[in-house]
Amino acid sequence: MAVNKNRAFLKWAGGKYSLVEKINAQLPVANKLIEPFVGAGSVFLNSDYPHYVLNDINPDLISLYNLLKQQPDVLINDLKAFFTPEHNEEATYYALREEFNQTTDEHYRALLFVYLNRHGYNGLCRYSLSGRFNVPFGRYKRPYFPEREMYVFAEKSQHAKFTCLPFEKVFQRARKGSVIYCDPPYAPISKTALFTSYAAKQFSLACQNKLATLAKRAAYKRGIPVLISNHDLPLTRQLYNGAHISTLNVKRSISQKGHKRKPVSELLAFFDDTPVMPITDEHNAKAV
Image (cartoon, rainbow, N blue to C red):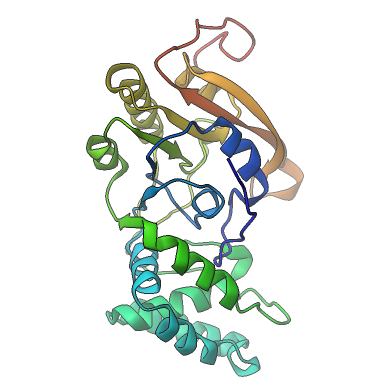
């Protein structure tokens, strides 16, 4: 499958741009690629399927994608005004962040979402439990205006349908002839690890379990192959028991406290109609 290495126009923590070749190598030929957790869309941008269903639980993200698909020139031209030296100031950033949290205007929210993404800290997308965007100012010298990347996304999105649904409903709607790629919020490194709030909701351990169950059901009972990326942990090895597991040469440091950070590799779990036999090794020796 051809890979063009198109960059997403949004900065995205945990984005898969550097891994698209390895992910594409695992994805089978199909009529449609379904992504229940599309995020910034790096796999979508660097794959070649006739049709796409791209879902995310974040309504701001999906609204932005739909507007960019429908009227790219208007959105991109209006966004240029936010990428000036005057807008790259802390006071202006927090004022506009407050406007984002107050407005219900779809077009203005889309503009501010891209502005906040490019000017906020480390490409984070984080909301409080009350639904307020709360990422701090990023202090970048000159935030990049992703005009070309937005036009590339808009052109390719003509072959995509964007939805804002719980991942369970995306699985329910999937049909044979499709393949599903899942890039869920990372599994916690321990039982006590907290998830970063995303779209004012948390992706709990119960959600991780539910996703694994749905993947197995889709592959084994409905003939829809599923590929999942996640941290390579005893927990995920147990959750994805029966999948074809491959590891990725990527290390992510986990923990907000620098002196406690540990490198954690990633894995790809591929479920199809030929599950592998359970492996009894150090990954699956005991329940987590």
